[in-house]
Length: 435
Ligand code: HAM
Image 1 (cartoon, protein in one colour):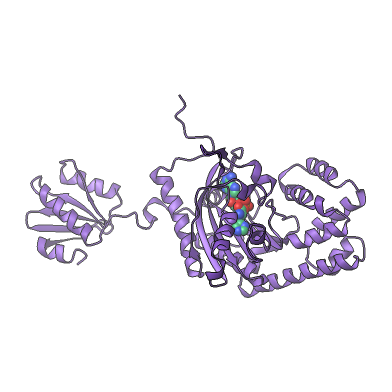
Image 2 (spheres, protein in one colour; image 1 turned 45 degrees about the vertical axis):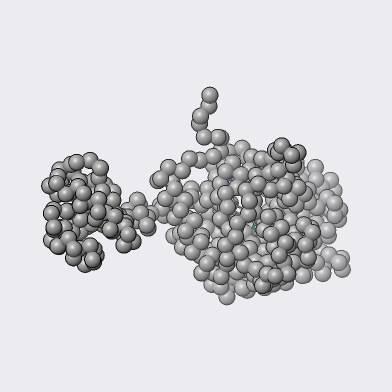
């Protein structure tokens, strides 16, 4: 019988749980101060919701099963399709723009590796009903705000952005057929993750014409989202339709970049046409957040999806947002030494450790503990009958801020940081424990 945790899942012992909560608290704090409201969706969804909409990568990574009623179900691998379903269902009564966030537990049947597990947590930030590139930039601002809140700097992480619309227009200009485009995008998305030779072989398979392939590779190396540079890199003038699509995508990128500047986060962000994103539903600006040396997988990824609600049977409603996972983020924070020490985790410290000074005040200890807790303070005690010294040791081990040492009608309050102590009458202490 194998009683180990399932491959790619984690047990959260209290130590790991503290880290998880510390990260989730920062995500929630930043979401709320940025005007986003929290939502959640079920862990089980109909398989159809993901199969067609998210693209082959997610479809291959789904945990799915057929229930007793013959329904094909999946454990959610992402929340964006469920968000679209929920918004569609109430679209007329929701004030716009819709700014929502969630912190969801997700499962993907991946091969577990550094930064990729089968079960993880993902923070989602999305704005629906707002087509402007400023909304894309606001989402990036929220991501950066959270990274900063957790102690990371612009020198340590980079948001790499590009435009799915631009690369699609370029593929059109390179005479890649519409039906071939999703396949080519999924190959381009793998460029940074597979060896160069393997990438070239995959691209050759997806795009058979040499000239088109060269054009795509040149575009993937462009440094600036500038129309003249793009068309020069593509080998000259673009035809009318392609030129207009390129110009429109570049104009969006220009506005996006200007908003990043106004938000004061330009130094966190960099244009990188190699960012394509694996999910099928993106239509505009896309981005991924990496550690600066790109030695780890992506910390976050997102972008604009202007067709998803319509594809799921709703109205035309633009959407934009990102997901940030806890796994790579946790590794990065640990590597950079940003995780707080045990004593610094907020909410973990006891206000009082209550002590029986002489072995005869045990009942008093219980009533003091209950009174302190009723008053909203964190208090604990030892079940063991122990000498005072041992109980004080326990108080220190538990990182309590103070000891309340009970002796008859007196309580000695000892500050465990400074060592200072004062004797107080019990009644007086209970009325005002913090003095
Ligand atoms: P995604 O790129 O699939 O996007 O995931 C976003 C982030 O979730 C990744 O950058 C990574 O940190 C984390 N993540 C994904 N898969 C795993 C895994 N197997 N193990 C650990 N972490 C993982 C989406 O999911 C989009 N739905 C995000 C989005 C929201 N787009 C618009 N709104």
